[in-house]
Length: 215
Image (cartoon, rainbow, N blue to C red):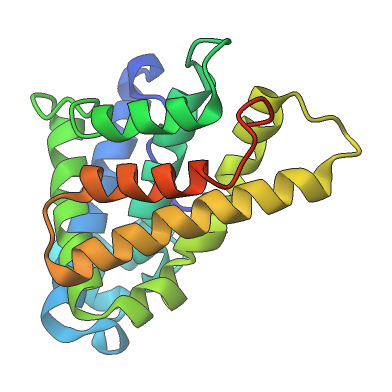
């Protein structure tokens, strides 16, 4: 069964891939709308297909199940963040890179494009579900392990870890992912619009716990 379709590098997509991503996003939005209205346990693949005006067979070309609908936003956003972190200046600390990204993440999505607009709508619908049912989103989306896995590669590259440093990479990626997820869940759950400020504060706190020359 094919993996779910998640936007990876919009600027490098051909026409066919752009169309595929747009279809996936429309299915995702339909699924998120139904989950918001009915609750995750009461939404089926058949219902999502009907809402998106597609066949069930088409649904399975893009997503494996309803859980993949909830996983799409955190997977896409984690990959977007890690791509940005990977291209930060070489002499910049990882903490400074995170802070810079927090302030750029909203502006980095071009909502004047069809893809960017649908992505923004998906984030908003997903966040509303997180507000109402954080435990369900955490369990069904796998947001924390997704974020941890995406951070592994960028942390390894940015900090120069080798093949024998898996434990160090795992500890750091798990710690950073847990803090980001904790703040995001708390801000969305509390309806706090100051996500960037809360992330800044959290990483400032983390910064007091490390030696500047190492991270």
